[in-house]
Length: 356
Ligand code: NAI
Ligand code: MG
Image (cartoon, rainbow, N blue to C red; front, side, top):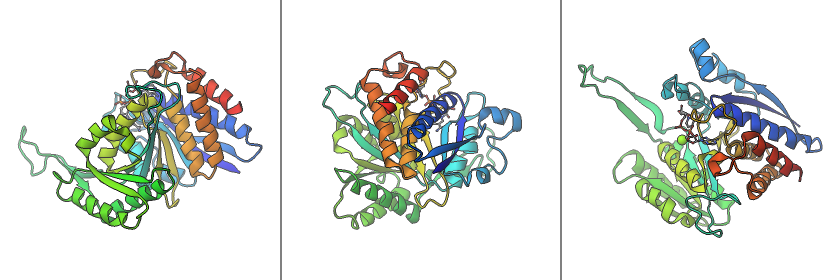
């Protein structure tokens, strides 16, 4: 099978880690006995494109992407452009345009990786943050200078939108995912003590949906308490379902706990498969280390594994994850994980481990 992928490396280390991920995927295909091959089309969208064309992606960009099997994304954002323009102009335009309403972000310890949380070798961390990816606090509703206030008196409103349909689909997704896991536990993250409309709807829907999954254990936790619980009782978590903003923050915390933001993988899914889904590392363009060849490619390769799973090649996904584990277990660690391996060295080691 030929798998057609749209690659959007974007900015900064996005370019470096997408190149690394493509090399690993091509090696995987070469070794698949013809089970699959990749046909890549690269789109040079991002901040350089913006400098030339005044927009982050080509006009009609979504239509150019629509027929691909998947989108493999790096990162977008650069200090020369306000972040809200770059983010909304490309990444959020794709997520929302293709209704990729479920964002999954697994967090797991890798062998050979020390982290602030890993005090003993037997500590385990294995959970998935399920992020509502289409509405909530990032619905893009609101405005500046409401009521035409005089200078110094400006009012800005940023509204969060919660719909029953939006809450219900992400919660069912989380429960279905929990059923595939050993622990079968879902924790809902809320803030319904302070946010008395949207978050109370969120809680109501959660409690209603939970009744359809009597085999799954549930609990709810306020987001502030959840931040502490991530650190203090990580073993109490399995599947964590949260709003767009809450999950965004908590999943960065989770990846730091696993060792580094550079490790974290994610999938932006349209679970109905009406449109292509998008796979990307959780991290951004990392301007502080871009261009030095030292970016950690593991988050991008892990995202490629999520992509293979989504495309119906679970064995290939498993091979990618095992190759990552073999690499870290052997002590081939990039700078952010306390080692000194370059992007290229980590990538070659992953490819060697694929073939091992
Ligand atoms: P960042 O994720 O780019 O960097 C945060 C820290 O993590 C930096 O110290 C960086 O060096 C390190 N880091 C990130 N990825 C790494 C990797 N692969 N290997 C080693 N170290 C890594 O977040 P920051 O600095 O807040 O944002 C930089 C730009 O990226 C901004 O323009 C922001 O808007 C954008 N951004 C884009 C995202 C996306 O496209 N999905 C997500 C997050 C930020
Ligand atoms: Mg984030």
